[in-house]
Length: 177
Figure (cartoon, one colour):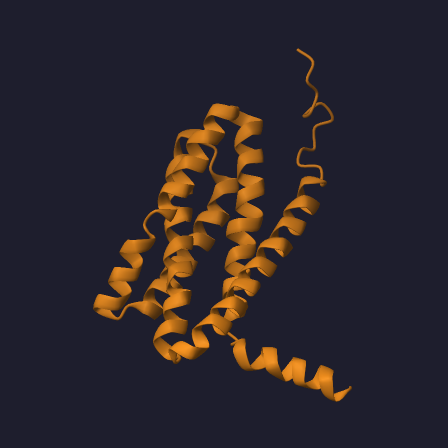
């Protein structure tokens, strides 16, 4: 390894912390899998209007970000919000395929958005509260890179999953009346 490439490898490792992987996985599910598979699944069974309701509910959960930041700072709940938000997001993501009642989907989507947002909001607070201000730009930049990498990986997985047959019936995708 040349001296230049060794310095580059050491440079990014200085700014990237192991917990960034958790956020890459969170974004792989939230911005990768959910953003692609949820609308497709809802559209297949209920149509475009239902997709709008479900995605609106998911994004409404995202509007709770200021609440999570306030709670984390005021009551020192950083770790609880990360773990709790991640658990909620994972449980809801796992529940979607087993929920046959379309009326429950907006509620699940809202919970998914809340869980994801609670966990994601705290990431920047971890950086800001644990490191000097002169390091924020570099550390948050690498955190965002991990988020983006997770999203890309999640989209690749979602694309691969959409290529798999979802129904065993030979006429499941038949559009004829």
